[in-house]
Length: 360
Ligand SMILES: Nc1ncnc2c1ncn2[C@@H]1O[C@H](COP(=O)(O)OP(=O)(O)OP(=O)(O)O)[C@@H](O)[C@H]1O
Image (tube, rainbow, N blue to C red):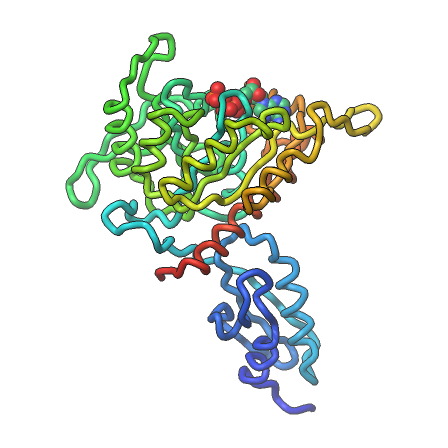
């Protein structure tokens, strides 16, 4: 029998593996937990900054290889866990207790698929193992109840401090709240700015969201007063801007990005929706609205292009039938692209947090 393998040897091997995005090695970043050695079998857990980590595969391969290089090790079992931390940079009084990150999904103009992206992003993050909420702040056209097929009235209950709170409705593993749950959809609603702000404050602070890793906010379209006030007053970790190829070069997209910059909300990146069309019969790609535009704008503004979602019949049908595309296995629902988008968003947020300092 060979010499017994020690925990120190395992940690020494793992300290040579770098965290691919955040830098530093996994041991100094205190990402390695629960090392166990049983004979020649070594197991440990890597604690990620998000369950939707885009580089999980790479981390698995590199840690496995590093530990297998220790003489006598025959098998390595890598588990993953995640500890999504509260973003620093949000003033304490504005933070929502128990909600680690608030992400705005916004667009320079209506109809580009902002709500579709918000809903699929939220469900995809939940599929990756995160706890997720979705707040429909698009009070003028609340489309999330229809897109997620969720109906009903949120129940009011007392929280642990005796305060009245609304219970969000649940579906597809996410918690959600929308003005669409509270009003009669056939009644036109006339909202003025202050009423919207007050309602949204209620949606943020008087809803039993916690605990959440990510609260996704489907913002009202455009950069008008309401969107600006919201961007300014929400405790946002960052903003994701949705555009289509034909609107990408327009001033609206730039305006949306500048609006967030002006109020010091970091841009997570740009999503190009309806980016191209793949003919279902031939598989041929058609760049109906041109190509490369979103990438150019992203590069020009120094933010990443987080993903490109093609035009897909199943994406639209999913939205209309209350079944978000990301739960479908139809090829033109592009579920895997939505999941990859979710990983990119989560990964970027972890990097932003690291750059800006973090709270445990
Ligand atoms: N990638 C896509 N492929 C096909 N249809 C899509 C795609 N993305 C969105 N759609 C469809 O386009 C329409 C508009 O989408 P959505 O409601 O998400 O846009 P929006 O930007 O939120 O609009 P508004 O600003 O008016 O709320 C919907 O019918 C939706 O199903």
